[in-house]
Length: 349
Image 1 (cartoon, helix red, strand yellow):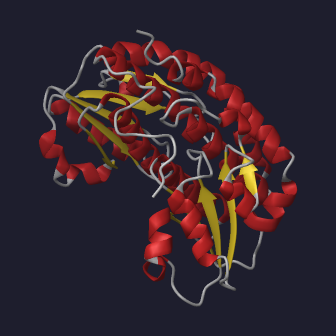
Image 2 (cartoon, one colour):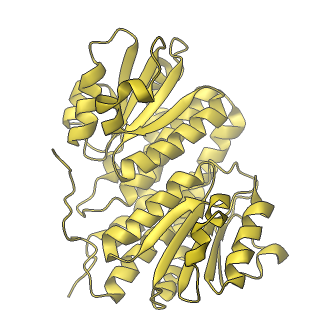
């Protein structure tokens, strides 16, 4: 059986989608000026559903750090059903819809729910220029992120990178734009290196999978958890790295896989958590900018490079090995990752 015939090439070609996304941002300075540099808004709210919500979290974290302005991320449904709980009255908002297809019912309903409100402006990011969302509001479009498979892989990477590139451009800080360009150059090699590492990991067939991350990596941890769950139906959870110690660590045993996305900002604290999980018997994987004596304890260390870059800019470099792990785990278990049960590419109500 040719399992993963769509998913594998989509993961493998994400560096091309990221390079294309960089060019799109360079060509859309007007969009950046109208929305990300709009000082009339008090807060930017990024919304999405499923994977799109998780990348919205990384986008919001990056926006806060790089622009020094208020930003948050919410599931799309919270905005059209519980808007007053998510957004305080009397403020001006930019609502950014995040949707691969641009057709998700929830993001459409959220955008429609604020279209007649004077203090709300909308825009979006998608992979389809002819989608309903792109017709409703002006969008950045990652056409090279389009996919045939159900689960998001290269679309997640390219859309996350595209928004981060737009934020870097809006910041006016040359060092952030340099970081973004370097990540685009590095991604192809990271994707190639990730493939065999993930394939070997998948052969272990762990009984539990835990993904940990902080800052911009918290959304990525949730996405990694969803990715392997969607593709292979295994038991998995995600947490903030230090939060995992406050109760959830009770599930860790010798059959547990614990992956920590290591930032440079909180490296020493995150590695202490990873060491603790190793002591409990877990197979510990670190995704890090740099190997060192402090990472030698781990069972698997995947080095993405770019230790001189900001943690936020390196976000998408964490993704290939996690996506491949979902793919190969599914194949090991006899599941086709292209067509997971109960799932469709577009979720409609």
